[in-house]
Image 1: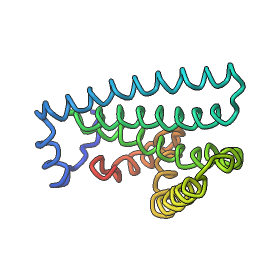
Image 2: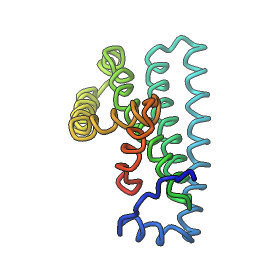
Image 3: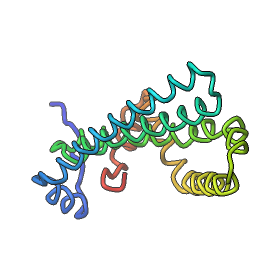
Length: 183
């Protein structure tokens, strides 16, 4: 007799699940957003190709950053849609784990994307002080986010997502600790 764990649902989980279950407007919003993301990504790809062809280094760096962020946003939206509309608790927690893994990776990768080369190119722009201030604020917010969530995201990633601990009970403990609504 194999027993699959039954994950308890919080009252918040139940409430949100009931609100989402038959929300055709929300589903249409996701689909519209996916279409818009595809169009934006297409423009970004074309712009980066053009910039590369004409050796416009600043533009290549900026379009690459925009593409990285756009693709990551698209991936995360797909995960969130699937997590929210799934009717299976294991699936919800699977997508929550995928979201945690993606967010963990992005939190690290964004610092690399917005690196010194990116800053050098910004310094060449007119009104660069406004952009530098915005970039500084983005980094500060990313660091604040890391302080709050990074340990939990890393644990989920390393035990029950990107890497899988060989002890299924440890994996299950992590999976049970995930709240898809909090994710």
